[in-house]
Image (cartoon, rainbow, N blue to C red; front, side, top):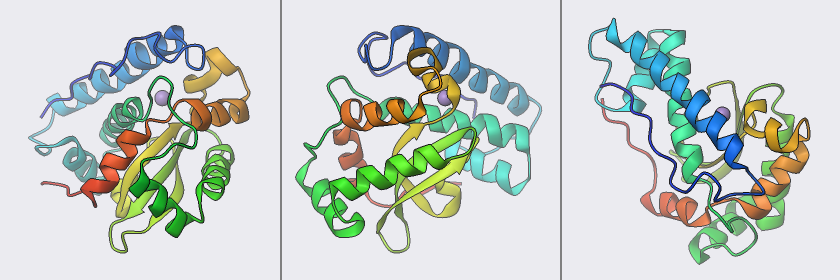
Length: 207
Ligand code: MN3
């Protein structure tokens, strides 16, 4: 398979002023596009690496192909991240089943917000903060990954992510990662997307 750059699921200015059109022009059209282009260059020189992006990333990790892993996983992470965002998103109005699951597994919305924000802020350097589900136990957990790291190589199903690479926030927030993360949680999360993933259950990866 080859990688395809997905379109943003909203207009470039739909998240303004929290995330500007300029940020998306760089983040989607340049950063994400570069992962797709560079990943495809690597794939061109190899036999078929799998029928899905997840399988390609799993194989790249197994084969210790760092270039393919980094570009493939960043393609996956960014495709996922766009869906985690929506205009007038975030806040405390969560779909009922998701709210109940956060109450039982994470100690409620306030604790979720504190722990998720902490994961995003304590990821040293580039990476991602996550709400994920453990595939074995079905329990929600907060995690963070460095650089291109993805939850599905660790037996976790991603439900929500915040990109904490500087390119995600430097245009709108400069160096203020705490303000960016707070705004992400309060005003940008697509809780319907998170609830739909929870409903689907553990992620299955085809070969
Ligand atoms: Mn990014």
